[in-house]
Length: 595
Image 1 (tube, rainbow, N blue to C red):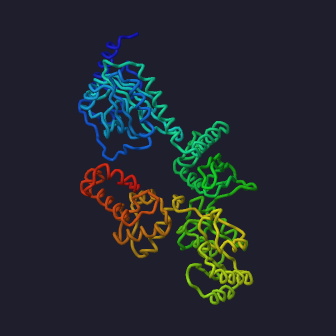
Image 2: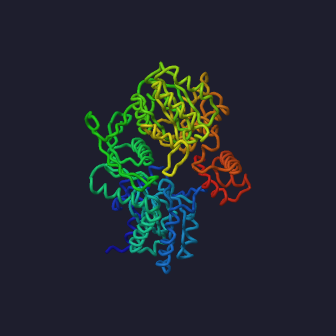
Image 3: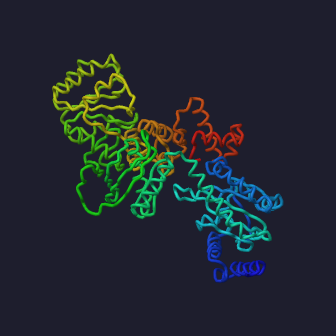
């Protein structure tokens, strides 16, 4: 066995040759280290200049940190007699936990900023036991002169990736560092084992239904040998699915799967992607009620086929234009919306009384009117709002005056006992005149009761409409249509940066809220390109709970302070008179993003 000191001397000489002559000077050095040196040099790093970037926006109480703490405590106990420091990083190579088993080693590491908040990406500090792990995707040991930067050659470190079992992505790195003279290769096995334990804790930290989804996904991947996706708390994609679908296509399929979760449908669905490819999906749900997730078996339909019985075909929308609020059908790309539109259009064409179920503001009334008017523009549409006062006699005359039209009853679930007889009169008039009936309703629950339940037997078809958050492919078209309606004569558009902010928001009030956001932005910037700072504060958050007025004021103040501070959390906290920990907690609680 080679003497470790002689080996270090040879590596030190190779490093000096590499820095002077380039890659040919790295002869005799391991492939992993030589490749890392080359990447470090290509990144423009100076081996004699040491600078580590500090981040003040790190969540030190993340799920990864919580799952790692018991493992770190056990590892620190096991290595209490060894002069090492244990560190945990997040998925961006930033240190979130550090435990010193040796105060002496800790003090030396302090001098190179190996501490919480500092980033050890390879592109920033060169070859090391954290950043190089992310580049390689596997455990790495870097000893002495194998480090690219001169300031780190006094150390030896070994790092192992922490893999999230559900996604297969690197969630962070577990690193053990020491002085070169203390290096022992046995540390590698301990670090790999501890990193695997943290990964298992990440899985156990999930709910029982999410773990059941993961197990079904694993069985499907092993058994079928085909492309498999699982959509729930997170998205899992096997290698075959990655080969079949690009990232944007995965997102489109994933959003459609989330829509299926609300319906608990185990049918076969065929989705047409933007490039014309047909993807067949076999859905299996996990959980009851609000589904915990769905596993999809995917394959591409290579030839034009007629879907077999039980298949749901999702293809392009109709060619007729419409200016209603749900979006122009022929331009919509979201498979979930296209499915709903086709179902509504088919039901109305067949004269079937149809209920459209969905969240408030999702365009339920509009999709009924659009689907009807795109097929028939000669007959009138009568809209009945169960909450607003109305003249039943006048509405009855309107329904019977032109047979064959459409009557839409809004908010059927809000029907009062007093209004029930009048609505029954209208339904009877529609039956006599051959008027097709549509109704809108919020999501039904099994225990739902009310006057409207007496009317449900009159309806033949129920169609679920996806919320805006599951219509990602349609967002740009919807924004364009709404802006044209708000400012038809102006040259107003949304910048790519602002579009990313809008795309990240969950839109709990759907199209109504999107219109509100764009109206606000147009008031701030009447013409030209709308920027992120022109959008209202709620667009910067991912929290779905309803905030109190005081919370809204505080959230907007934090967003404004962060904007003025260029995203610097410390300066924003100082401007607001908050502690640093308070502003981190509130940013997390309000779900503030993009700053």
